[in-house]
Length: 187
Image 1: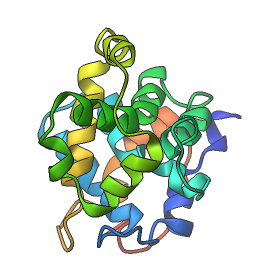
Image 2: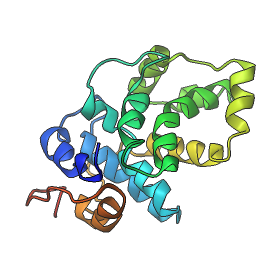
Image 3: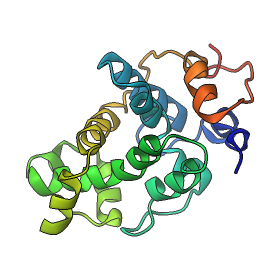
Image 4: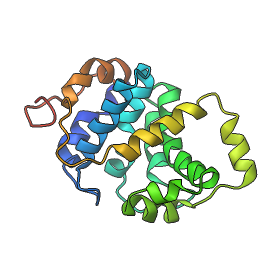
């Protein structure tokens, strides 16, 4: 796929208004997650991963399983067009949820009902060797941070910058985008 082959703006225009049980749309969720990353002064690649972490739901709106979830679907596409760190973080934000459930018994109770349901589909707790493998990865801490922002990015009516605020980042990493005049996209 060429760099111009992934029109994220077009994905959000076409399917970003879709609600997924969290009282926010896919676009609102993405913008909130990216906002949290920017507020925490995350590096650009991490902000981009926060913005794109759930595009697998837009690319392939099927149910999750432990071996094929929306993070994997998105990472498969992103590997061809985005920095490897972005693709890895997008893929592992699901695994980071499973990690947090495994190491912190209280974390499961903090999850929204929708996240608890998807956790079950995604495989629930990790095995000891999976925990060790994840903790050893250079980007592990970033995946956990992304997971925490994901959990916090479900606030109805939260005002965020529109997608166009990420134009430079999107186009630098993914190539030209199909910008349109639409609430949430350019205003």
